Length: 124
Image 1 (cartoon, rainbow, N blue to C red):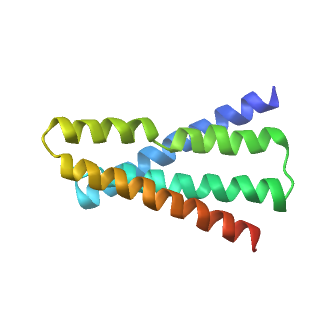
Image 2 (image 1 turned 60 degrees about the horizontal axis):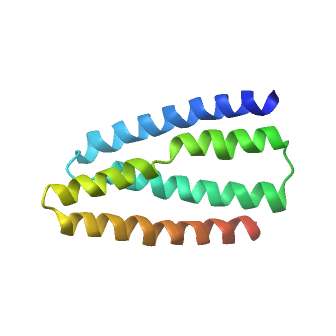
């Protein structure tokens, strides 16, 4: 039961964090390019990789709390499905170049963020 409660609590926090960050970024830079989703995906990727390694190799927390943070919180925060839909919509709107840039940045910078997070977590 503790795991389900942690998942729900983490999910609520992740959803609100995603919504708030998206609103902030769109208010600053506008919605013309899916920058908010790109930033959420990169930050979520970094945090997931960092916390995964940190809680696996460096610190001990309860399995329920770990699941709540990683699956609930970051699962609700990250936006891969939105990422794919936004790329598809750019392509459908005749903006294949923007779509290619968006996909390349998300994947390239995402893997870089994950490697950086793993390195930092292992070398604290």
